[in-house]
Image 1 (cartoon, helix red, strand yellow):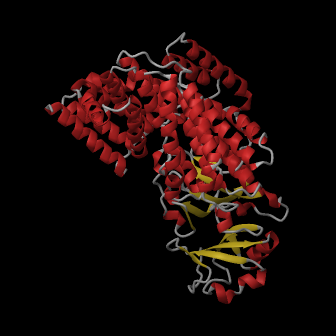
Image 2 (spheres, helix red, strand yellow):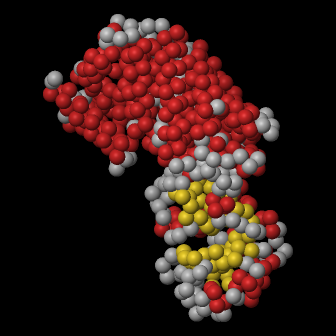
Image 3 (spheres, one colour):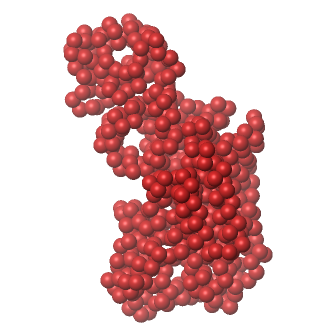
Length: 595
């Protein structure tokens, strides 16, 4: 083993440890890998930064822009709404159309975006029909992951694998070459989720989400104690508020430390303490008047007047969008109340609801909030890049006048890419530019639509694949795999490759796993004197099987809080789906792509 290979293995091992520990962001890890390769002389500076100009990277960010155009113009919303309407009153039919919609949309747009669009509608329908959302959201996410296998642009691993094949002089896959295997794995996955998967899914989430944990009879209101209030110096119990006004004081937030405590707390009330009160509108207004209480600044109740429409007050559950800038910030640091004119009443984090110290809790991707505000406030959130409202989107608030343009651009891109008239990267770039030039997205919105974390992750990891190939590390790893499987059928080698990829993609991104394993897959095939295409196809399918953990893929994280899932739920449902995908791939890939 040469010194260069030792350096490569050390860098690779260190990167995997950092990916798994999540102590450092994945994109930063990728950039550290690039820097380490330069410092050790394993790649030149030009080779190190070629990833940022790679056709695969250009294709990935261009697809994000086109996907953003489909979202902003309302095309994806309208398609989702229509497909869900076809479900009728049948739960089984709802599941079928839900997974068809998720898989179909993921074939042509970012699968994270597909889930983000469908999830609010699914939650709304589930609650109206009294179907636990935990029975719906995991099938949605898994179908989106599998649906990305149907086209070249469906998922970054497909794009990366094709680019890596070209670099090594192997005939690359065409735009729809992924479709036969993609359709089959999606169909098998759907069948599993409709039968065995449904039985294994938890029946845990309750109707109404967080709002059911903190129920609302008519209204929830936050009221602050004025300097002349008769409540000052009294305890909640001795003030007799609940009986006197027929309301329920749920929590008290002390002004000094913002700590939210039970209404049974023995502490005395002081100026600027905040009461979270539940009750009928008229009773709350009477209480506010007699006890000289003020609605909290930024809370929707500040607009309450006797002549107002009571339906203007709205309670909703929201979650953070995949590309949100809010991750790891507290609600206080975000000035959330002032920015959105919404009061946060509860938070669900890691599957558990809480109402304590909300101002100082750091929000993470997958958390959900119970908030209250005016209906116009929620309408304005529909196009907010940082938040998702977990209810059916109001399509009329999208840029629907651009819907036909967005559809025409998508169709033109698909036709050009399928015919091979232009390289797929140039085709996607043209489509992204048309999305901006025609006003479907502004340039600022286009930048926000791109998942820059994914872009830097891919660009940073590509040089490692180059270095592994140039130093012979790829062949060394391929030799070790063949030492175990060489005397067995090539199908067994195929299965081994699937297992390694599937396990790796659970702890690092599917894009990073693809960059590392596609060269190994090609090396295995060449060592055996076989066609590399079935080995590469197996790798990209396995890279989309992130079913075992919520951290395996962003779509799993999106549904984690909203579905009320536990960490173990993914493994319980996903392990059998992974095994089924393994068997399916070993059977169908050699038939469609002969050795």
